[in-house]
Length: 112
Length: 108
Image 1: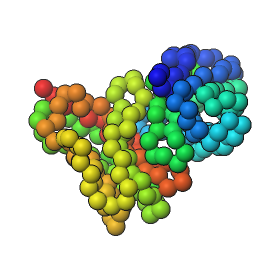
Image 2 (image 1 turned 180 degrees about the vertical axis):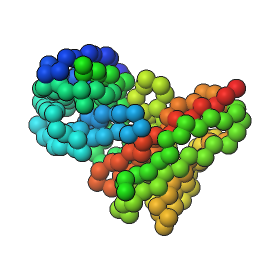
Image 3 (image 1 turned 180 degrees about the horizontal axis):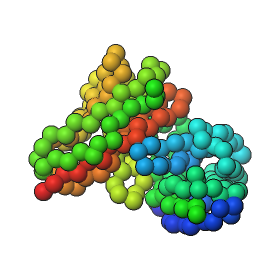
């Protein structure tokens, strides 16, 4: 099993550009999550999904959008990139209500 | 007051030392308590998972939960250079909350 995969690993965007961060998992987990990790700030939940077609906002959803058309994929969309979105983004998945989340390797995004 | 407080360190110890990592929290509804380990430029991975108060041991690692004091700890015995990583505490009721992480370096 590949587990949770994320692409790209690194990306530099200009202010106002858009991009989609890809996330896929092959563990048949219903629950998937997007976090951002800033230095000294821990992991902040952006959006999560409890199954295909169902998504909900986390703590810091502004400036982001998600969709979940399949169990495996959970892309994160940045529409108008801002410097405040410079961060490391992690996708994770889990069984329902479990505290054990499986994380991808992360995407390092810089917005200049 | 943050929901989960964790000393960010950094913490540097010699090989073989006992390491104590701690978190405090304010939400008494948290029922599940976890420690994640994150190596540099990698995603976090689950290290320990406990439910409610008490101790749980796994090899050189011991997780301790004191719900009355809203305080959790992770102890690492006989620390090794391979333990050098950032350790994040996490807590869950309906939602999961993470601490900021403590960066640990174990020097040979």
